[in-house]
Image (cartoon, rainbow, N blue to C red; front, side, top):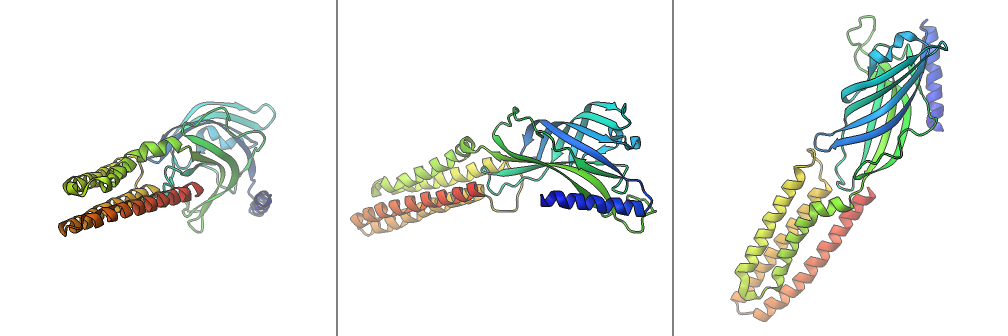
Length: 318
């Protein structure tokens, strides 16, 4: 309600400003119905969206069939549109397919939640001439289409003003600042990560368990224990490179980095404990070395499991 009142107030302020400047401003009622979202390329930060768009306005010069602009779109394909002006008002309906570029939040991957943003503007008429009002009647996306691997949380439409700190070469402006009316749709999707998580991290956990079983190899097999632990260390590093290859570059520390780093640390702890056991064996303290192995095994396993549960639960909650 607060957002609606703010939008209405902004609209009336703009209308008053337009009248003071002698400019006739028109409103464009716009609605959207999303029929498909597919080809989500997580690494390239893009996805394809197909939707119906309808616009109702009085000024025929707007010509959205020519001047429709979709910011953030890599490509825009207007596959179909119709125009009806029989009642003195232009009613345009079009079907578009856009390849959109967006930013992904991967800190909690694969338990991530993404916001897909879509906006439209008129490239020829700024907010002095044109503002949008949303058509909020009905659904804004087809509930029957399924987004494989994702769950749709919400779809919200709104309107506003997009400011550009440039006059686009128009010398009639006193300062390099222009504003355009904007219609926006925001779709929030959440990844269904139950299967993907194990697909990504099963190899990492198996590598840790292989290193962990070293505690149950007799102290006479110290060479085997070192060999298994070091092999597990490289297996985790290889698993991390494979997972990172499917993700976009990020400067932040993600859940993927945390779990792999945690596993590497605990495998290193196994190697350190094995080295200490070897030191005890060299001093003929076999019984003490065995007790140390059993105690270290329980502590390392318990702390590792608890740490994993905590980090994963934090990611799910985020």
